[in-house]
Length: 65
Image 1 (tube, one colour):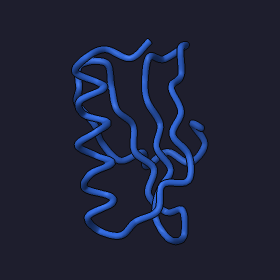
Image 2 (image 1 turned 90 degrees about the vertical axis):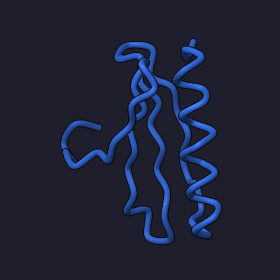
Image 3 (image 1 turned 30 degrees about the horizontal axis):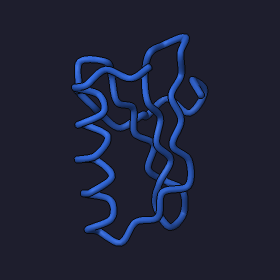
Image 4 (image 1 turned 120 degrees about the vertical axis):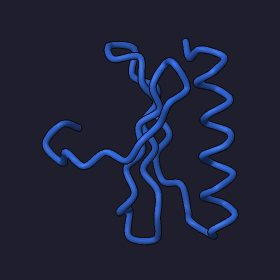
């Protein structure tokens, strides 16, 4: 189950993506790593990880997921 900080960060990230007219293709919570993964962008080129403390960043490791 995502944390409250994580849920709020998800809303902020999705809001930024929609403001930039970027489609969201995948939105997934991983129970093993306690992270939310978002795959977005017209070419599916944006991979975003949201951590349990509400911090988020772009995933630059293609082999990880």
